[in-house]
Image (cartoon, rainbow, N blue to C red):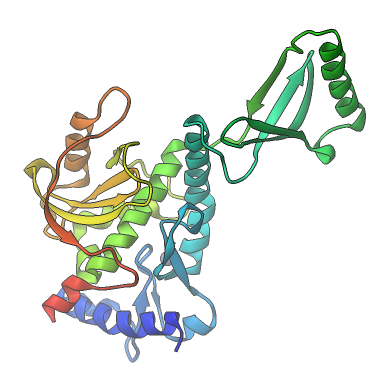
Length: 306
Ligand SMILES: [Zn+2]
């Protein structure tokens, strides 16, 4: 049995039981066991595995060091990669570059020497830049003229008046959604269906839906001093104005409503806003119950309830 089958067989009965206990099992199609995509809550029968409509989702995204953690539907998985995760990846590279570290891949850039612009790529190596014009993105004469301008200036012993501008744009808002989504999926994997099916989590799902433009108040704390490999889930008991499920993924801490819906997303956003300093850094001491970081779905609350 592969991992996807195992995760389906484990998740589907617990999903059905949670729906029964919440009194909403009548919404499910009858006669079979179904697994719901935790992002869109569409339900899928076992056959969806063979049809590749249920896919292994990495938390955080694979390009940001994530591991396969759970099943989501193909559409949510693919769309999030395009709409949100790509922005998180570009932002991470930009931050790494600003911190003087190397980046894993070149970024699109425009170089200008003596007024001649060419399209190319720039990659931070950690102790400098590797810059390269891309032949197929430029008229060959332009590349030659650009190179000649650089050479001529060097021969004259002048600084060539060289500038470059990075063109790889990202949206910080979309990058943030990617982190909220990763946090939601980690919390789901740890706590299970009963956790995500409570109304306090609805605004989170609205936000992480493919193509969503829902504007979620920021529930993310950023702290550049944190180790990028740190992973933690904490059910926060203190301070009480942060009663939440705090998910730490590297430099980001995402505060999701707790299993009792003690605080709404808006209330959490307000508490975090008060802690944010001028540079955007959020620093606070949290106390509460540590939940193990999931390597696969654990469904802790579902198992406790049954
Ligand atoms: Zn989905």
